[in-house]
Image 1 (spheres, helix red, strand yellow):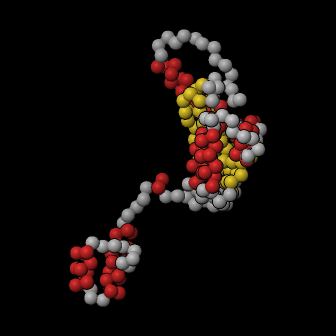
Image 2 (cartoon, helix red, strand yellow):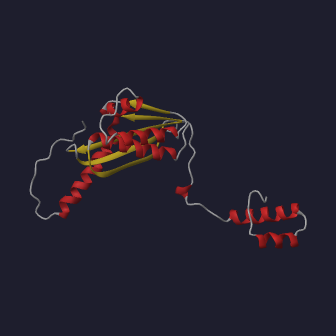
Image 3 (cartoon, helix red, strand yellow):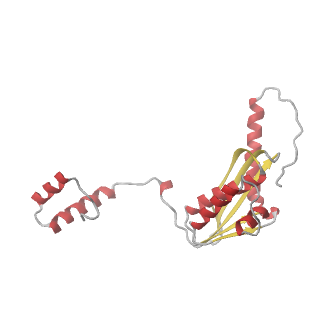
Length: 207
């Protein structure tokens, strides 16, 4: 017990007076700690949910303007139970499409770590990101290099990770979350500006 819990010297001396035998002292401390810890409760979000098995991560990022107002989104799905464990979408400021794609994947990987899957299959409609992570493409843009390294570092914390390129139409749920975040931001900005000047807005761009 002394190897597990280091007590202040004056407490150890007092324990030796009360319990001359080391075995009795260890039993007393063990019981005391067990009673104290039984009353402690962690917040639910602090407790990791160990799902295991195979999980699917769908991530997407987009920019209206490229660069322009950008948003990211991810969905973590448990295919065995057919349930969505977590989904999230948010605006990230002025960025390019490719930066948004990487940041969406990074946030999705961070969220997936919470569930500690045995295997994680990442579905992205960005062929560039998938091929850069596989080493098939070189990273030419300096802004993407640290993002690629962060994504790889996070993937190393998982037991098994696979990056899979999928058609854009197969990633419609994450895409919808991206557009929802951008639309809500635009509505918020328009309400904050009295008599806004009409402007022509381009189509949602990805590449």
